[in-house]
Length: 332
Image (cartoon, rainbow, N blue to C red; front, top):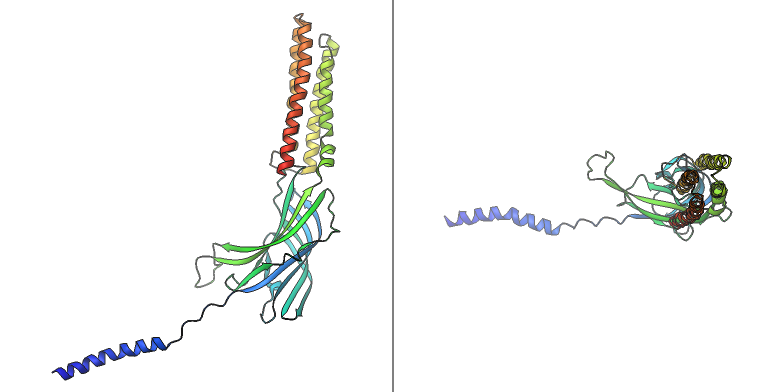
């Protein structure tokens, strides 16, 4: 009985031994290949139509990609603009330079930008052109920024603005979707390149152009404190002067809004106009109180009130303007 039992055990163990031997002999699964690296850069040739009303800007620029020559890539065909309303490439070129392959094209595009004009006209902006790889995920292809050659043509001039610098950065754009690819789940990620154009407004000339009328209206309002409200004609003239200056400020508010475009933000210009309107309203209140004091035969008190109100309004108004303008210029 012992011999058949040993034979049976050997038959049962043989497949296990053969399986273990086969697994030991099988080669290890290969490591995944590293992602292909594509160097990307841009050079801005023109910038115009900066439009806060439509939340857009227009730019012309050269865009290029460089990668190892053996790689079979067509980055000009697979790049996608993320924030473009219009994207028109032209003058496409592909060249081999030693061990590398160079792709370039010139682009004219209209791009979305959320204009924050709360600190107008001391506002500064980072205009972004966001580009991403549209075919291969980051496990297959990544971008590297060509910072040395990215820049802006010194001839680029934008009326009312300064172009401070242009930079190129790269990142990964992750999506909570596989865009319906069968058999995949959990989202996807693609290489992204961001061209940043940093601009700042030529502020002081525009500031005085838009606000000179406001300050003149305020100063004329201060002159009204020197009109004697005890006399009917002068009192009526004082009130008419203040009311006229209020209308002038309101009209200038509309003028600034037309220059800036409609914006939901409470801008620096709005704050200065409101401060001026409050000051002029204070002048009307002071005129009414002074008139009542004169009618009560308290002329000295009325004159003293006018002098103090004029000095107080000027000091407070000046201080409010300094604080608001300084904060806006610092924040940009």
